[in-house]
Length: 131
Image (tube, rainbow, N blue to C red; front, side, top):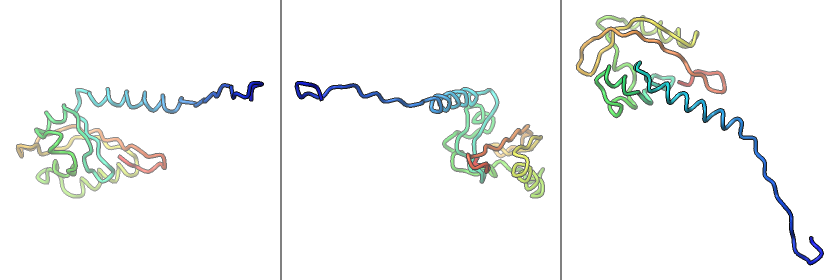
């Protein structure tokens, strides 16, 4: 309290925003990467589609609105791949965190087309595959 009875002073708030700035930069980089000329989708760990980029829309023939919420199994070609093929693919994802190879997928028109897939798991803070 000052001599005249008034209260004065300065209050300083300080916050380390390093982590927030780093997270914002990672989101910016991810956003740019998602605009790639390669088709990309993001799924949850059950294969349910959360988002797709415009290149994937062109490749598959589906719009993002048609795909979001659907499971990636809509692209399965049982004509070329049996259940064991897909089981082995997802087993590799669970154990190694990635899978890469040639796959025959079905597009919106029902045509089966060859594609090269590169799938990478995204782990949560707990180390478990989340996406």
